Length: 104
View: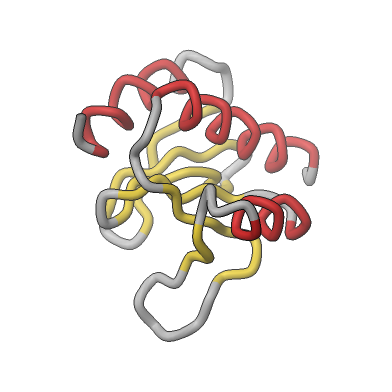
């Protein structure tokens, strides 16, 4: 399954949550809540915004890699995840939305 095939149905599912909307980030499809992007599809990876400690954990355990949008600078609260499973991506997208909502 491609990243787009994995992301699109999850995005549609998340858009059913009140307050969630489509956005654009780095030229790709993104999801936002409270006017803040929390997830996007970028170069065939899921990119999500999470607390710094969670980002470090995901990178340390090999589940994700630090996100660099191509400018040579890693974004500290963002990680990129390869397409592996729908359940993993759903959980990360949900976690990212909750993080954004908690920070308002």
